[in-house]
Length: 64
Image (tube, rainbow, N blue to C red; front, side, top):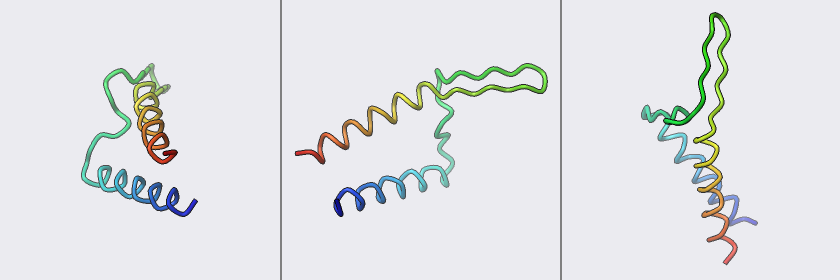
């Protein structure tokens, strides 16, 4: 459990560094954005798929 928490903290710190450096995390091609007048709808489908794939890979390595 402790190892999982350390790795999760390192991953969150890495994401924080990328966001602070200006990497457009969450605005990938394929994300759905609808803007009409004063209404806007944003659905990050590609971002969700990539995060799910990354989490699956990380947890599969931790499981071994």
